[in-house]
Image (cartoon, rainbow, N blue to C red; front, side):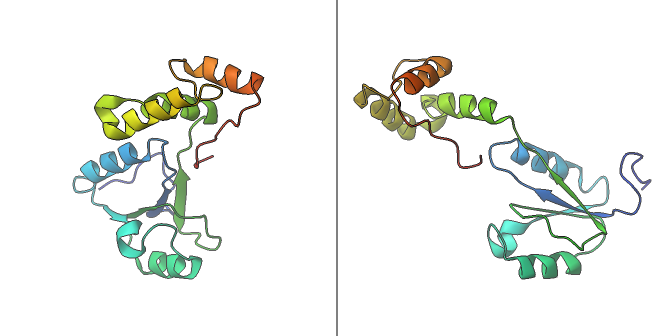
Length: 154
């Protein structure tokens, strides 16, 4: 295979730092679909050592991997691995909050969990945001001095 024109030729191994709720699963699915045709391998790090692998174990695992490998996990950047390319996808924090606000009450996607969230919002008349749009909810919480919860990815 010919090297890609947009990736420096010195990199033949990549770490994809998977940041939750930022489209990373989609990227990994595309990589997996392309791996055979493009002669590379995708390794899901969480199947090796779980999420957030300890640094020493991560370095050991990465150094032992073959060329043309993409390692995917919720991994931190490690200095000294100059022959690896590190990429991450992040999402605008406000857009993420907006998306999670609606996703958490999507009964088709989340089923019973969505109904529980709707009930929680309904019971909390002061800060619950039941039947409000995202921007109205943020405005209400600000004016009522309620806690504005940030997603754990932020």
